[in-house]
Image (cartoon, rainbow, N blue to C red; front, side, top):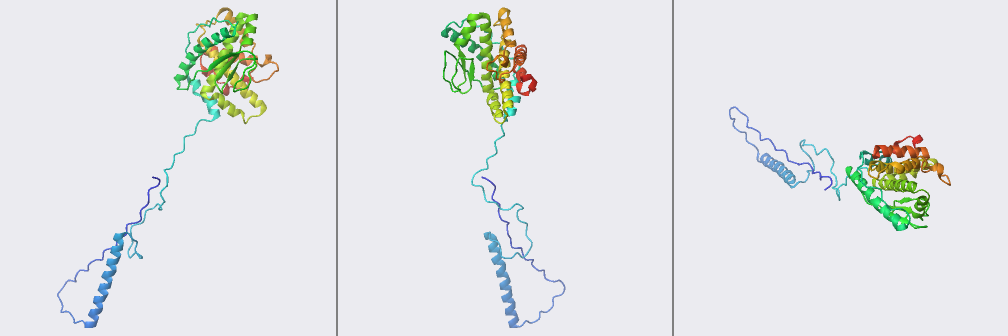
Length: 333
């Protein structure tokens, strides 16, 4: 575990060469005095004894106090203390918020499949009828976006759709029957009954166009949530100036509009988007935007931008046409 322990150098006592006897005729050895002989014997014993001591030390692994001859160099890397725990490799860097909103795999899905659903027949004359309308429409969008997300192994979860009257609490605040909204905290689309009912009493065909377009738009926010685009856009917004925050909001909203139109275009032959319904939808997208909001807050895009992104999604039938985060500012006014 950790770095390997570096072992010390292997110490050995260098062998002493054995002298060869000189050649030639043997001469008569000279007599050596008794005292000199004793001295030579003592010296030989001392030399041999020192050699044995060093050899024993070498075999036991101890380093001798002096190295009488050059030895092999020690390991080039210094001895290190083994780590107490294995070193943990650094985790790969995840995509940045900019990379998510601009380069999501959502843009590589290609044309989405038609759900082959006809428009629900339920009219918003009662709350249960309105709830039944959106419940059927929800299943249709679930099918199209489930198939689309699986193409790029993106996560998919079914959102909830709630029709309400008056004010209703949500994790995103009180919903006040002003307009539909998507709450990312509980992945729920909130749909005010009074708004749909009002338009239906005035013009049933126009009300149908509004209900289809609005629900597809809010589902577009759910797609943003699933792909991480929604949270990444909110992260980007934190460090922006007030005007930049409004531009970022328009990028989110116009993308949701475009994604909603992608579904409507893919399923146009089955809805069907034709006749009075198509005429009213065209009028709707040409007259939707911040130009008509009171009080006027420039956070959803003007009518020109809403129309252009709606047409782009409807005609292309693919999310790649909805990358508002790489579009020039002039296209998200």
